[in-house]
Amino acid sequence: MSWLDGRERWVYPALAYALLAISATSAALLGVPAAPPEWPFPPWQSVPWPVLVLLAAVWLAAVPWLYPRRDRRRAFVISHYLVLLALAAALSFRSTAFVVFASIGYPLAIAMLPARLIMAGVTLTALVNVTTQSAPGARATLLAVIAGVALPLVLAGWYVSAEHDKRRRLVTRLRAAMDENADLNARLLDQARRAGVLDERHRVAGEIHDTLAQDLVALIGQLDAASRAGRDDVRGRHLDRASELARRGLTETRRSVSALRPEPLEEARLPDAIGHLARSWADTAGVELRYEVTGQPVPLSADVEKVLFRVTQEALANVAKHAGATRTALTLSYTDELVLLDIRDDGAGFAPQERTDGFGLDGMRQRVRGVGGTLEIESEPGRGTTVAAAVPALPGHGER
Image 1 (cartoon, rainbow, N blue to C red):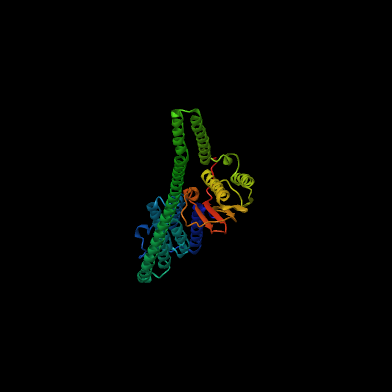
Image 2: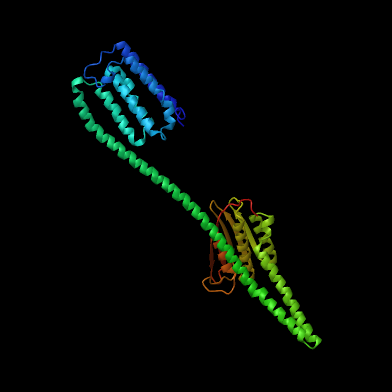
C-alpha cells in the first residue's frame, strides 16, 4: 500500500502551496515587470501580482474539501480547476517565475478531473506553460500551432477514457452475470434436491405398494376365509397364514421406515457410520471387507451424507444377495469439490446394460442424481462389480 493512501487530499494542496511559494519568492527576487499592452487579461492588468498570489492561495484552500467529493461534484471540480489555471496563467504572464506554480495543473488534472477530461486539463496546462514563455509577437502563431496538436490529444484522451469506462461497465456486468449464475446454480441444486426427495417418495410408495399393500390384501383374504371356514382345522390354517402375513408386513414396514431415516448418521459422522455398517455387514454376510477413508473428512450436508450411506447400504446388500463374492473393498474419498464412494467386489458380476426387475440400481442412481452427483456401475459376468458414486462436497450447516 502506498504511503499516499488516505493522504492525497492534503498532499496535492501542500505541493501547490510549495510551488506557489517558490514562484513568488523567485518573482520577488527577480523583479516583476509591468504588464505589456498585449497582456491577455485586461481586467486584471492593474491588479498587483501579490494580490493575485493571495487569490491563488485562497483558491487552493478548497482542494482538500473538493478532493473526496470529486466524483459527486464534478461541475464544481472542473470550475475550480479552470479558475485556478486562469490565475496561474495570469501570474505566469506577469513573470515566468510563476510557470513553476502553473505546473501544478498536471497533477491536479490527473487527481481531480473526470477520466475523460484528464487529457484536456494536461493540454491546457501545457498551453499555459508554453505560451507564457514565448515572445509576445509569436504567441498567436505558437498558440495556433499548439492548438493543432492539442486538439487531437484531447480527442484521443476522450476516446481512451471512453473505452476505459466501457470496459469497466462490461466488467461490472460480467460480475453481475457471474453472481446471477451462482444464484441460478444454487437454485438448480435445490431443485435437484427436491427432485431427489420426490424420487425417494415414489420409490418408497412403490415398495409399499409391492409389499405391504399386497400383504394386507392377502391378510384380509385369509381372515375372511377363516371366518367362513366350517371346520376348526381349516380355520386354524387360515389364521396361521394371516399371522405370517402380518409379521411379514410389519417387517417390511420397519424396513421402509428405516430407509427414510438412517439412524446411524444421527449418532456418528459419515465415515464412522459407514465403517460400522461395513463391519456389521461383513460379520453377517461372512465376506471379507476392506474399508478405507482417504482425504480429510469434513461435515457434509445431511442430504449428501444420507445418500452416500444409503448407496453403501444398497450396494452391500446387492453384493450379499447376488454377487457370491469372497472379498469386497469399500473406499470413501474426500476431495476439495467432490466426495467419492467406491464399492468393489470379486463376485459373479452381471451385464449392467440388461434391464432388471429390482429397484436397487435405479434407486441408487435416483438418490445420487438428487444431490447433483453421478453414479457409475462397471461389471462383467464372472469379473466382479464396481459401484462408483461422486457427489458434490456440499458443506453442512449444523443440520442432522
